[in-house]
Image 1 (cartoon, rainbow, N blue to C red):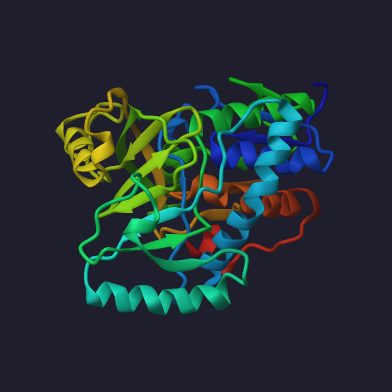
Image 2 (image 1 turned 135 degrees about the vertical axis):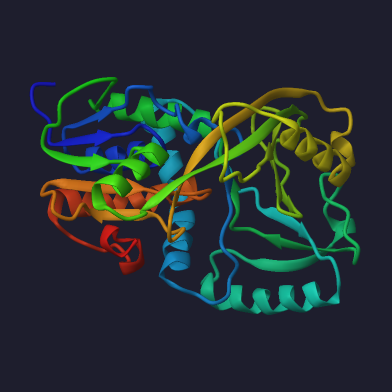
Length: 345
């Protein structure tokens, strides 16, 4: 590529999605990552695209809702452009209702969803007996079912984005000098570097561990049981995750914490009791100090921008992040919520 309009540093969920947003607008884009696409937390296993609860609405929840609604068209377009499936599906989610207090709260949130989710998805209460074997036990016999939650396979999604970008003429390389506008989507190590450069804590990394089990439940909803995600993928596997570890020595090491998660999943969902563990994974996810993504212009660095901090919600936020960052980088149109801005993080 002789010249570049946009250099994106980082080939994870945010970096690749920003690159796609720019390519779709006709920009010449180069993605640079010394470790390759999906080498960080975006190359994990879980892929739970789950919404915030429909209450106490704020710009962050509204942004995520819009992104989740965009996801059907976004991933279909990626698949069509590059010919590689991201493993995406809006299969919904089930959560057990533990007691009367939880039931009252679920009813309130169902009312909130009817307004806040604009009729595009629902949050409802169903009987455990309605939903089949791939469902958790519930002390009340009732479950929350939402139809906004979706799944994708993180590695497949990164591969799909890479295929689509290359089909549109973008470059993805390990090393290259900055050209044009520069977008920094460099994950948890990038947050550490930003913190050092800006003289204040911007964010850091939180380690997570996850497992992949062999069990065919391709069209089943994902489950959220006592902080545990159980996500059936389209390839006949089920992902289990994840831990949240602020203190760690080896970012890629798994340990007894993961074994506890696996046993917890087998207890929560009896059909997994004999399912083999196909893979154990650990990685570090970028977490901004505010927990909101960090998006926008990099103060005092003209022509440089940041797209980082998608802690646990990176792929869910990716369609909207790619759109608003392309608008900002290419046209100067700024639709980023104040709470996401670098200077406010």
